Length: 253
Image 1: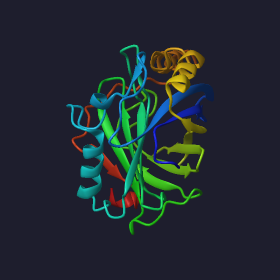
Image 2 (image 1 turned 45 degrees about the vertical axis):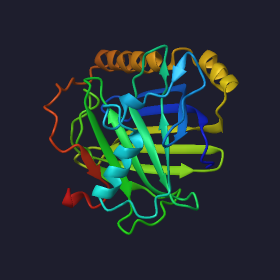
Image 3 (image 1 turned 90 degrees about the vertical axis):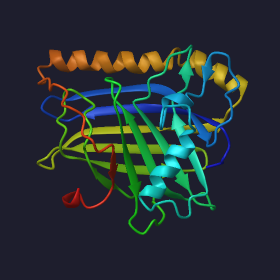
């Protein structure tokens, strides 16, 4: 992966396996920005720095490096590439943004997944090896689920993460297992990286109109479909005080 501003044009897939099967696939685009990020060369899209991390005007890079340092995972991190949706026409909703933490050889050492729900809450999952070694493309990493996102899935069980970072392509897979260790939900985000330019942003804008509004619309549309299918609605619990989950032995979380 080149450490330069890029556009990530991708395909999102969600597949629920039970109690009723439901699947959807749609196309989106993200910004892939080395931190600290430069301004985005577009009048219709911008980089939503105030919507991420501390969400108070400070750089998302500071937030990410603070998390890495607090968890002892900051060694060998030379670059951080942020994968996030742009703010389009003044609006943004980022279900999840990914901070790819790379060493000086551009090899993946850690990933922070910053998750937002539709209630304005935020939680993060840090995937890192206990020895801070390289995260391999075929490696699955487990983390306990501590954040309420979907009102149709319990705040329980665990996630399994996989990241495949290549020169011009990126793949992210997150599967959810319930508290009985049954795989219930499969998700993926896969696509191509290309240089960021004014022309590329314009093409992305017209190829994926109002992408951030599309994301929030599809969340509610899929929720309505699940209600119609008879899936039980789960009221939102009070958010836990713990705002960070670290990958590792699930019995110790």
